[in-house]
Length: 130
Image 1 (cartoon, rainbow, N blue to C red):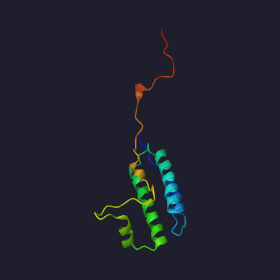
Image 2 (image 1 turned 135 degrees about the vertical axis):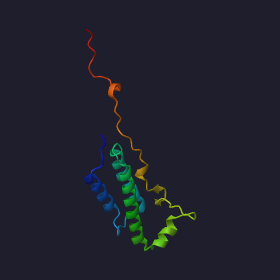
Image 3 (image 1 turned 90 degrees about the vertical axis):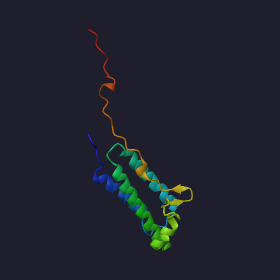
Image 4 (image 1 turned 45 degrees about the horizontal axis):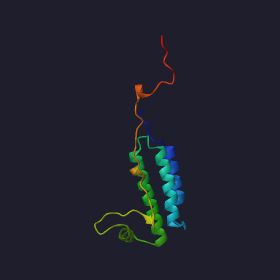
């Protein structure tokens, strides 16, 4: 049996991400990243037994873009300045950080399915001897 992430919890986590990453927010970036990591890690741990790998990647992408939009508004950056800030000389994107705090990817959360265990589950009733 496959279980999927429904639309309502997905809308709920996206709403929480939106409230933390308003464009005109004056909150410290470290506080925003810490709050986002807590919300997203808890949500990912709850849904890690579902078929959710693509959903986790989509939420990571959504969060990254929200933070980039917030930083562009805050610092009046153009896209060239964003690339200059977050891309290495070899062309690799750097993670968004504030000091020691880094935006964690929930797509790195291992997705494990419940396994059918049949006879390996011990019976709660004692065996009756005849």
